[in-house]
Image (cartoon, rainbow, N blue to C red; front, top):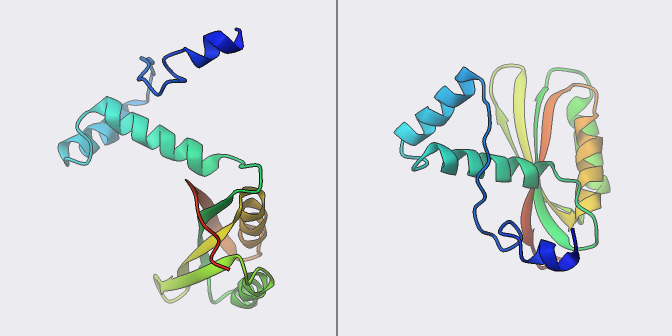
Length: 152
């Protein structure tokens, strides 16, 4: 496909393109629940928003544009050293870590959300370090698609 053809395609202009998907029945039920709850007006809108969010959040950004991102972690705070290790990593990246918030979900379980601001590859590196910590049970990086002015 030539550059001229690619530029004039409906997808490159932001127009909607029809796609047919086969989904497990459980996923279809969940889409219907989102529509019934008024979160989305129809299945297509729900699927489009969810896919766009997954593609943006899961992308491996390149370049030096400053982006915002959040790292969401769950871990056992009663596991020796996990909180100290997470704090040490955050102190290493002090200019990039904007804030963090912890919520104790149970006697041993903690949810922590860390707000970051840095070029995309740096966001990924910080997230990978945090998620790889021994004791972290679950972790995910979500990168906003917007370029932000630096805080520092």
